Length: 95
Image (cartoon, rainbow, N blue to C red; front, side):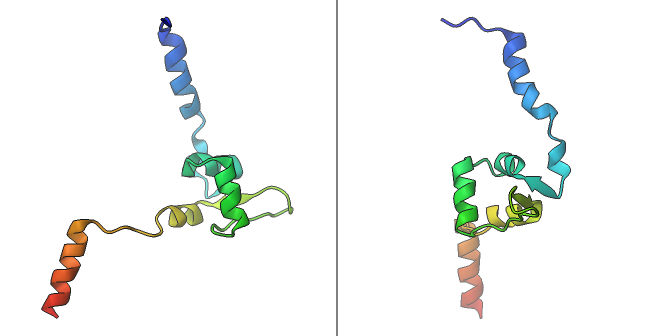
């Protein structure tokens, strides 16, 4: 059985949250985009390769993303709730 070391376990949780200044940035690096989207590097490379998500390469090498583009991609293809569908049907029947 593994001994629980409170200082080590809590330190592991707190350390990643200490460097979250990038959350306020408008332009994000590849690593920051990974953290924001919570996807794997291969998934993000696939999205850029397929041009499914906008990106920038100012020097032709490193990839950068606009936060707004990432947020728009995450919120695309909305699946309406049953309540939203019901309200739409009712509104269409009234017309």
